[in-house]
Amino acid sequence: MRIKMLLGGVVLAAFSLNVAASSLSVQPQDSALKVLGHEEVSFKHDIQPILHDYCVSCHQPGGKGHVKSGLDLTSYEALMKGTKYGPVVIPGNSEVSTFTKLLTGTNKGLKMPMGLNSTGTLDRQYILLLRKWVAQGARNN
Ligand code: HEC
Image (cartoon, rainbow, N blue to C red):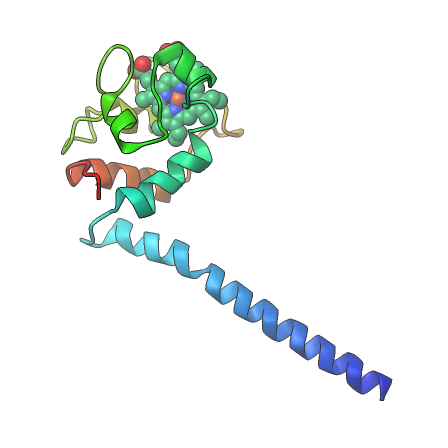
């Protein structure tokens, strides 16, 4: 009787782990498809969450990226305003936009996000999404 209940518990646990794993895997697969396909990248659904997780800690009023450069990444309007020296996003051109150039470290040795980890580079999938969003016109979509 005890063993049966125990077994039941194990089966249930395995089942719910499975469900959790498959619902978790939906999002990355979705964005991977967006990176490869012709689908439109959304500021709200794809870009803002990346900025929130990797940039906003420094690029919000009072954060060290904001204090040094004036760049606030907490909203679309603030991102498009750029630094105190001017825009960092040139809609349609991810090659010249500092916003996307800095992710691979091609601007005067500066690389973002600053001090991320040992490689200092954002996930390739995220970089591609950010570039694609700029290339598609950097819209508030
Ligand atoms: C640990 C803090 C930190 C994080 C995290 C961070 N930044 Fe920065 N960022 C800075 C600082 C500090 C500067 C100012 C650098 C300077 O001017 O020397 C800066 C400057 C910038 C600039 C302006 C560079 C210029 O040409 O003046 C851009 C664009 C930028 N960051 C984008 C990003 C993006 C995109 C992310 C997230 C993927 C990010 N940053 C994450 C600290 C950070």
